[in-house]
Amino acid sequence: MNIFTNSINKEVEKIGKNFTLMNNAWPDVYIAAESINSIFDQLITTDLKFDGGQEWEYSSLLMVFGSYESWIISYIMTSSCFNDVGLMSLRRSLEYACYLSKINKSNERAKLWTEKWKDIKMRKSFSNIFQIPNKYFTNKYSHLHHLLVQYEHCSDYGSHGNYETLVEKFKSDNGRLVVSFQSLRDNLQNSVGFILITGYTILKSIITTLKDNIRDYNIFDQKFDNLRSMIKKAKLELAKVEFGDNIPPSILKEISEDNNSALDTKYKSLRDKYQHDKK
Image 1 (cartoon, rainbow, N blue to C red):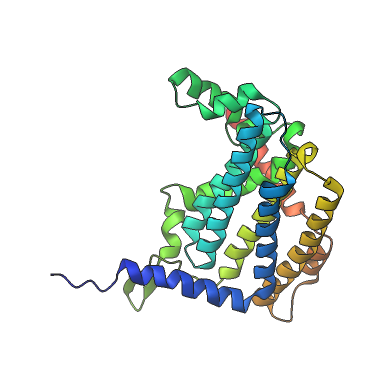
Image 2: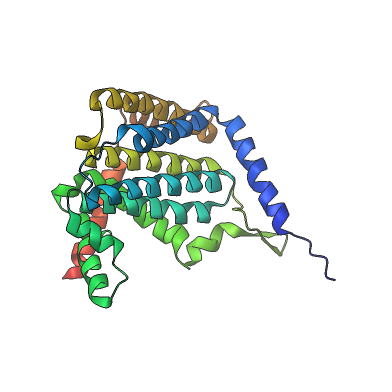
């Protein structure tokens, strides 16, 4: 019988240990993540009202859950140093959030989503309406524009068989090639921060899409205001990890003002890229 130096059980143990270490090291990040988790849970279990028995309502509830479940897996895996797996799951969470906007108040589109594998005609029709990012550049989907940037990042660095997906899995050590299932990098805070902020953006977009179907929306919106404050604290905590006591004033200002100009710039580049490809 062969004795392996590594085992599946050891990898599973690492997930729990690393997750606990991360939570203890960055409590503000963990609190913000738990708040996202709580708001998602309340949205699904108590705050969404679908009284018409429509197909789009049923599909919407499924999509919100799918986005929630995928984000949870993404956060757990990234916090445990399995960054590529985290990005794969995050990409799916983003897809559900985008698709949700397409089926809103449309039974026809909801049916297209549930039956898209029925035949090639259905698959083509689905792609012509739902394809990301091509079908979301209009102003109607402005609340999703930042998600498109995050989706592209997940595709490049986690979801496909690209070199970039593996680059964090190996390093050179005194002439030896060291490989690992976990990501071999010191700046874990950037990956965890990306997952956290993307989860916040996903949740915000879902709430915008389903605003008319949220019970006591003003009360619910207050919960989201509280989350916004938690996200700022988490960003500051992660900035301290990266810069210590010398956080650049521009970063402090960006955190304080909840500035998204970097995402705005990346969105414009993404839009221009796809519009150019169509010519």
